[in-house]
Length: 313
Image (cartoon, rainbow, N blue to C red; front, side):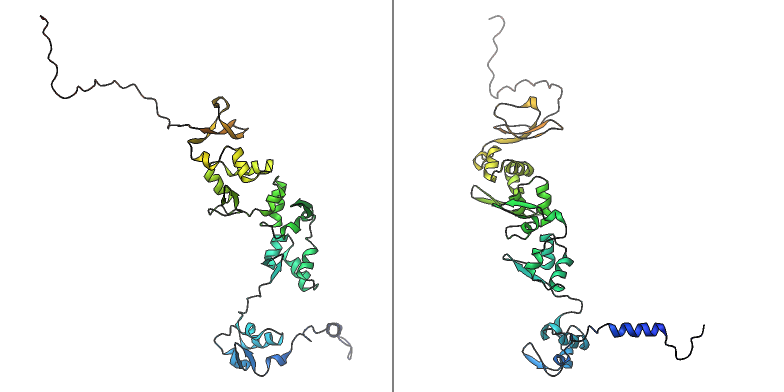
């Protein structure tokens, strides 16, 4: 169908109207005067073209010009690679982390934190105060004599684990104070994790387990279940540095094999096995049963033999 002459094209008219309504977001963002004339950086002052040809320049001339017009520091505008974004770091409670680090610690999604700070114009502390989106990180937790939402413990200066890890630990029955302060353990290396003090020494819980010969989960269970310090827990399990110097053995036995003086360390209900610490036990390796071997007559001593008496005498 042919449109009558002088009739405006509705598509063109709509596009023109939309363009007229949409403001140019670039207006006010660029100050091109900052990219003109001598530009000072690294104690030098030279033109934009000279900086673009400088060996330290990581981007093209137009990128430097645009960065300067956007208000970038001249040294950053010249040296930052094209796809390298600035690292967002924030300090809170004497701890400095990247924004992604704080997102992990608090349980608040990275984009949520980013939006609150850069879109809503909130300070970092205000962005944290709004909390995470889910209710599971808002449950109150009491530790160190105070009660506050779970996510606030994740950003507490005493926290050595993320909010998600703390939540899982408390759900598994951990003491809240230990759930907050103990670092996640990297089992591929030795001596990592939150150090525990006992008898004037500091080691991680896995190292104390190796030293005492008591499984780490047994020590942890004794500490959490009875709210004991490490030293008290190990003492209640029959281990001290002095005891380790004596002849003791950690054995797995059945109930009928228990002996007087055995200290029960742990029990396994499914198999009926009992782990005990037994003092002064020497358990030789089992040997295969074999046929009795005839003993050879003793070898007579070397030297003159006594003379035999004759039968007639």
